[in-house]
Amino acid sequence: MTDGARSRGRIGKGPGRLVRHSVRLVRILAGLLVLLLSLPVASAPWLLPVRRWRSVCLSVQRRCWARVLLAVFGVRVRVMPPGVDFSGPALYVANHTGYLDILVVLSVAPGAFISREGIVWWPLVGQVIALGETIFVNRPDRLSIRHTVELVRKRLGRGVSVVFFPEATSSRGDGVLPFKSPLFAAAEGNDGAAVPVRPLVLSYRRIGGKPIDDFNRDRVYWYGDMGLLKHVWRLLLAPGIDVVVKPLPERTVSGRRTEFAEGLRADMARELAELGRGA
Image (cartoon, rainbow, N blue to C red; front, side):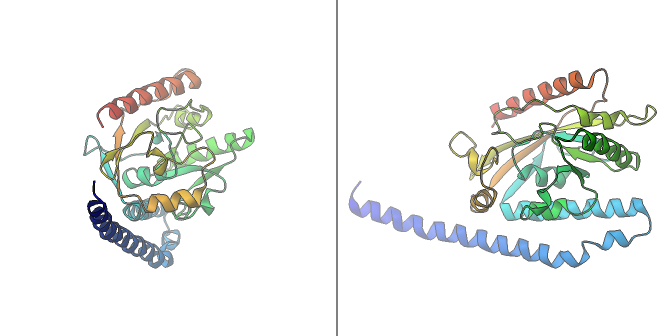
């Protein structure tokens, strides 16, 4: 390639990159403005006299905020197959690769999250989590786990769905880590009033139109000792992300919880691998 051709290539790429970054900046500012303007009404559902009404309004708020933030990040979510019924109380579980999973799940399924303490201080995502009904847990504390199970049972008993990541940490997206089983006890209910467990397999397919692989995965997945703010900034500059949400058939907890959790993990891992082959 001649020096002139190289120069023309650089000139051609420069304006295109500037336009992309400008569009993304406008999108970020617009999304943040929407979130800022909605803050005054964020506490409005707590003024409603009926608890059920509050739960419905909070669920709608969480879903709207999640979808706005996904638009800010340039994330496109597709439920496969479309038209899945997410009504009725359930315990939703999903594989976990980073903070984006929270927004992806909230954008399609109603529910309050089980979250570790401290996440409320995360930028952007923490504000969505803080929108009421979140159950915070200190995982190393066994007493805290028991208390969390009782809180989840009460939420489910009131008709509020609950979401958690049974891996209890995020991974690099090439599999599903072993599940922690204690929180599945909440789905057994009280006096035999069990609620269904609904698995959601999250498969991030493409970034900027290219399949996610070992070279670009770290722009999407957040795991290990990655810095949060640096990762959020890189994600905001990403050229667009496509993710598929694949609900698996619901099931009820039966037998030993550890065996149930391992069987569920194996089913989700197989589906994740299958979705990866179809990328």
